Length: 543
Image (cartoon, rainbow, N blue to C red):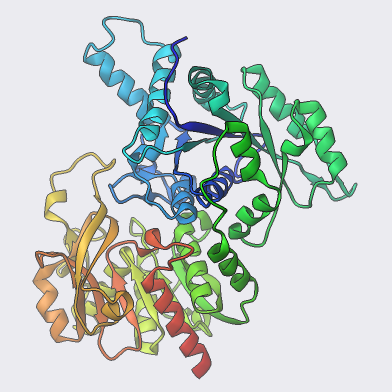
């Protein structure tokens, strides 16, 4: 077996028993604790699905599509990595089965394999290993790379990834790699007892494919007693001290502190021979968590979308509201509003008592008229409002219909032959036939109009935000809308693309073409979410 000579250490994070245990939170939390000690850390998520990326998947299937600065459409766990580590991820930080096979097949067609028979081992596993190395060999030269393997041990889709990391561990040297397995220890309420058998079976499945877990994190509703950890250790061939208690906590931002209390980062560093650069700098994080625990006042903000049946579809928005709430010493309670069910007859009842409104992005016609009705209600009632992506489109359509009196004003996405296409397809999108990764994606600059609410939020003349859209504000209507009181508060540097709009004589009404939620951080709340919550607090006090 060919040895890989590299100074970087690797932690492989796998999951067992059931999905959605929180491998992404575990990886993010451990990465944050290691970074807090001065180490250079990077992360890669390996996703077993055959889609090339989640860009064309329904939010009900996949949840949120997280977009990076470099325009990659990725798994929502990259959002956790960015928020916890406070560093930008990119397309190299997410690899899918679809990407792996697409790359190998393209190379085979080009003759790169010299006529060899292409097989899962070694060709697919070699490509997986190369993706991990690409992250480790970036210019930043991380001291440590965390590799999160999606799915659950035992899934047929995950087998090539598990085989690849088994090989990789041997090639870099087992002293330079560590296997961390997250598993479920269910609490049987009828018996008032925690059960370890699922964990035993899960670790056993890992051993069957040649991987011995070095540490086990146990997700549970209640803390594990010492005797239970010793039992798990006995049946899984690890030390009891290496069985970590991953008990449920009120906020995901408490997870790192729970792991720190158990000295998890110290254990990992000792096992991998890593040197502490400085004492852990966690004061700011601890202060934020403490503030979050002690929030006294509360505001209610209506999140009006079409995917409210699956809250993971709006994961970054939920986290951005948590960050903004702490910044305003306020607990943000969300009222989930399905815009498909909204009408002019029931909107007053549905929206009664809310202190702010957010209309998020989305695709397709379903629920759009409800979003437009929400915009009208927020504009006319003076309720603080933030529209994101399709939320901007809805705001422009509503204003054109009800203020400019352009009957039937619409987007060509929903009505290609509308008489008043106030939102239309971007010119560069008109010849595109393939749907995957062809939208306007990634970070783009935007210039702000001084004196607007947008400028007051950012306090900067120029910003950079992440986009994911095909349709845009139609400049043919720009002057008419501005004359009627709609303020164009943010534009592309060449003044060609309208990126932000506001409504004059409204307490706080901002709509943006980009996705501000993707850049909100625990220690740096996004300015627009922060100010929306601030305005909601003002409205709550005056009611």
